[in-house]
Image (cartoon, rainbow, N blue to C red):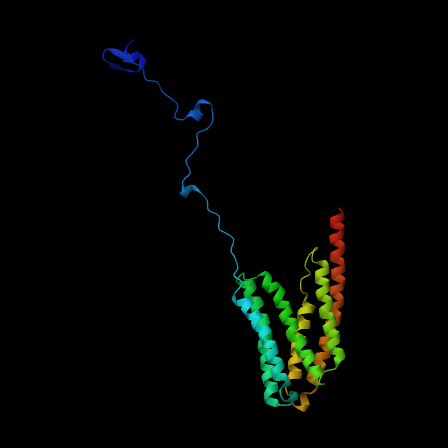
Length: 237
């Protein structure tokens, strides 16, 4: 057998045939060879972002809670009759109200929404508003029926949120946002030592706030009942 015929080499006068072996054992049984994976060929998925508990939005929320007793102290100093302390109480109330807007804006813009913020933020809002309502009623400057109507609405809406939470979340309506702004404006007007010719401003704004409070409360009840009904039908199907 010649070398040309076999494609082999001649060693010591004997022909040595070249045997072409498969590259890998897997090729013998028809399994595709395993391709080596390098770090460069692996798509690395970004790890989920963990929002820190101590972020600027939550700190502003906690600041609002801390300002509540400071506000009450300023309001009740000299039985609420001292002009300087009333201005201080108004300033603290206004600052705390501003943090309510800023912390929500920062949380949404920079992705700082946390479970802690979802729970504490509405508590801080109600604590500030409730402190102003009760404080003014204790000083005899605001009828108790107004305080009780607003307080009842807020408690009822909170209970409704828990009632429908398994079926979804009811977003804040424009009426609800207007109600909040009107309440803050009315309370601020009551806190300020306004001149006599502006005496109607606090009362007119407060009565408007009460009307919006009741109307938006009824609207929330209707939307909660509808959401629960839709949720129960979906479960039944």
